[in-house]
Each structure stands twice: as C-alpha cells, then as structure tokens.
Image (cartoon, rainbow, N blue to C red; front, side, top):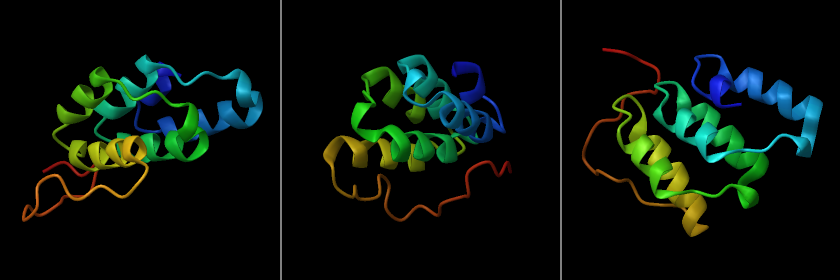
Length: 105
C-alpha cells in the first residue's frame, strides 16, 4: 500500500487492492504519508478518504508530509483538515492561484 501510494498510478493500484481484498487492507500512517507527499497524491488521498474516511487516522506526520508537498500539498491539506473537522475547510492561502496537482512547471 505504501509503495503504491507513492507512485503516479497509485490510485489505480490501491483501488484494485481495496476492491479485491476489501476490509483486509489496512490504510496505514505510512501509506497516507506517502500519498500526502506524492506530487500526484491528491487523487490518492481523496480516494482513500472517500473509501475509508471514518477509519483513517490523520496524524501530525501526515499533515507535515502534505505541507512539504510543493506541487499539491495545499489541496491535500484541505482534504485532510476537512476530514478532521467534518466540514469544508477554507482555503489555506487565499489569493494564491492554484496549480493543478501533478502539473510540473
């Protein structure tokens, strides 16, 4: 899971694992840290939260990993804090133009 979360095509691999193994697959802190730090990780984090939101434990280290993601960390932090708060989080840096995740400039 951790290895898949750190790759460009991680969502597809994780989706396959969850569809095949269901609840037998644990979403670990290491997997979430890997996804949060992945330049293409927003889609992966969103998928994991949609599938397993209530059981996902969001730790300080996961938030730090997302904060260090210069490509789409802001979007990932928004997803994570929304999950923590149970409501829509406001933008973390208003006024800044957002770049799509996974788009390198």
